[in-house]
Length: 230
Image (cartoon, rainbow, N blue to C red; front, side):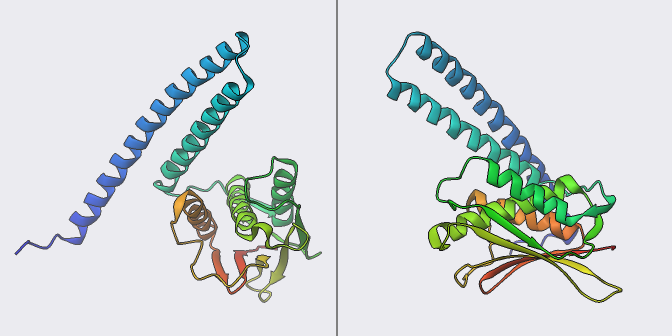
């Protein structure tokens, strides 16, 4: 019979495996960066020699694929590390969500995502808290991007409406953000770990939870709750 490992030994083994995995991912990123360097050199050479357009387009697709893979590997490294916050007082949740909408609406459209804009509707009440603005904007942008992909062509006007409101009592106010309009989901997208998008949403949920909040799905709604100070 195989002897049982103690909890401390098991945790140490998992931590060692995590450190090894992160190092492997770093090594893979270095190899991908090398491939991208060669591909970029090949593209410049092809452009100088006036190669057919379809060949240059193929090289561009190769470089774009390498960029996506590198971004996925960076995300895996980040997921394997503790969430460290640089909190600031009186951070306006409305401004963070507006910045997310501006970034997504002005940036290039993702394949399979919505064709219309991300529209934010918010309460005219104070919605400030002690947040890490950069980390929280990253998390809310990831969730909004995931929502745009999940909704896809199901929106009548091609847009995604996001509602930000104040909830809770005077002692424990919360900012609640809701992305609505989905079919009833059979899985929890924040803890599914299905593909790179699933891991990104799981990481976004961890960032929200590190702020003392929660990320969940309920029926046709993705919902984030964050504690407010005013």
